[in-house]
Image (cartoon, rainbow, N blue to C red; front, side, top):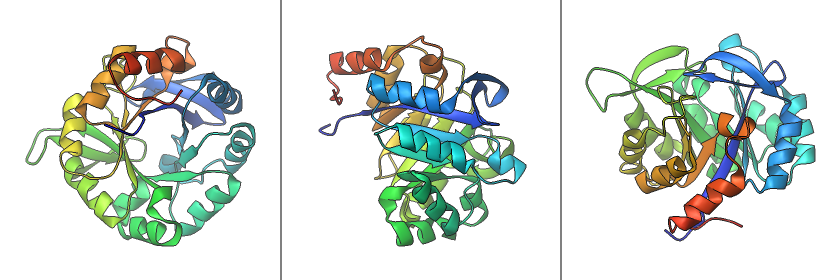
Length: 254
C-alpha cells in the first residue's frame, strides 16, 4: 500500500443536528454539525462525510444551508449525501461547497443516475453509498438496503458494488447496518468481499469501537476508514487512530 489511508469522521444529520444510534435506529442528538466539523478539521481529519439520514425516507432534499455553513468553516474535502435524486441535486450540492456527493436510494431506483453524474462531473465526485446487512438466501449473503436502512431490496450488495463501480462510482462507502453503532468492529468479511471484486477505493463504515478496529479494516481492504460516535463522544481522537494505523505500518497523513 502506497497511498495514505484517510481517516474520516461522519456527521449523520437529522433535523439540523448530528445524531447517532445503533443499527440505524434509536437516534439521539450529539451536537451541532458546523461545530463538530470545525473541530475535526482542526484535529487533523483527512475528510468529512455529511449524511442527511432522513432525507430519502422523508422524500425531501438535503439541508443545503447546513452544508454551506459547514463548507465555509472547513478546509478539507467534504462528501455530502442524503436525498440526492438528480444531476441537478449534485450540481446544487457542489455549488453549496461539497467536494463529493454520495448517492444510494435514488441510484437503486434508477442506476443510470450514477453514469449521468459521472459523465457530468467526473467519477472523482461520485461516491456510491452502500448500506448493507447480512441476509439469508442466494448470493453473497449481504443485502443492499435503501431509505437510510429502512427498506430491504433483495439485491446482492456485492453485485451492486460491482455494478456501481462499472457505472462510474469513484469510491464506495461500505456501511454495515449490523455493525453500525455497536462498537464491535467493522464487518471485515463484507469489506474483503467487496475489495475482491471492485477496483475503486473503499471507505469502511459501521462498527468502530477501538483504534485497532481501523487497522483491521485496512487489512481487509479499506482505503479509508470512517466513524461517528467514537469521535463525537470523545472516546477516540483522530490522532489516536492515526497513531494506531502508523504503528501497524499503514501510511497516514500527518
